[in-house]
Amino acid sequence: MKFVDEATIEVIAGNGGNGCASFRREKFIPKGGPDGGDGGRGGSITAIADRNINTLIDFRYARLQRARNGENGRGSDQYGAAAADIVLRMPVGTMIFDADTEELLFDLKQHGEEVTLATGGSGGLGNLHFKSSINRAPRQFTYGKEGEQRRLRLELKVLADVGLLGLPNAGKSTLISKISNARPKIADYPFTTLHPNLGVVRTSASRSFVVADIPGLIEGASEGAGLGHLFLRHLARTRVLLHLVDMSSPDPDVDPVPEAITQAQAIVEELRRYDADLYAKPRWLVLNKLDVNPDPEDAKRRLCEALGWEGPVFGISALNGDGTQELVWALQKYLDETKAAEQRAQDEADGINLDPRFDPDRQAP
Image (cartoon, rainbow, N blue to C red; front, side, top):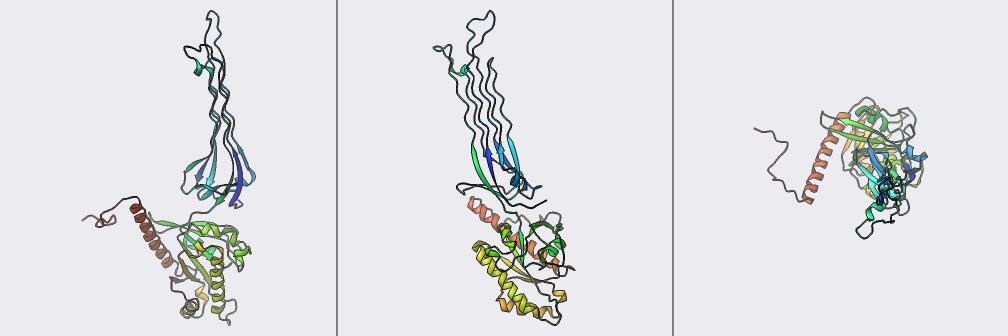
């Protein structure tokens, strides 16, 4: 299926049905009185987050979503039927903007989260609501209200804990296929990844995290070159970025480190130009294909010195799995600590103060 992460749609809720002005007329029952029913409610349009969907392609071609109007009321106290609502299923991580004002209306972050995009109009009142002791034969009724109408822009930002960043053919797809359940296309030429891939990395029965792989960046990506800039937004929700650097060389007589330094610096610069928040995210350096480097430790030292790198650095071979388990366990530990810190901050903001002596992970004696 084609991956689509942007779409513009128009949603039109149904109008409410009109109330009815009617009088009961039956044989042998004179002056039966008003019996006009109310109109039915117009159909609303809602959106629900579904983790089984990973693209907005359905809305690229079905841009108009219109709900039905409610039925008009009828005589004999008959109320008009309400129109059925329309439910639009969208991927988890979909952001819904007002297309005219660019205001963020909704952000679907959890599976099953449901929001109303356009509310159907309420039905009008029949004349039976207007009878009174001084108005025995009311002819008043009200019309149904119009449903809401909006132009919406949908933007998908996938939800992942870890994002993979690097040049084409750096080994991102190989790494995500080695450590997770993702099965992206892998080949010995660049630009095999044409859309983001998500993989779940499970470290135990109850612990796991999600990794996102986007198409490789090239120099000038922040200005529109290549494919990677189109999908950089999908790294915005991640907690840590893995910057993969290819440490191999097609020619065994050529030192790969200078080229690796140039490529790593180019990626960092593109990241800085694209978005300051993304550039400020925690980033780990992952040196891939070290199994074919003649002196891995020396290459790692020289690269880190040239970049002035002081953050975490891992040497791996995504193809045969060397070093990947150490990387996975380090990521799981970091994510656990980060989430725990975020939860503590949220508890403090909500006024929840736990006894510092309480340790939920401590086993009872």
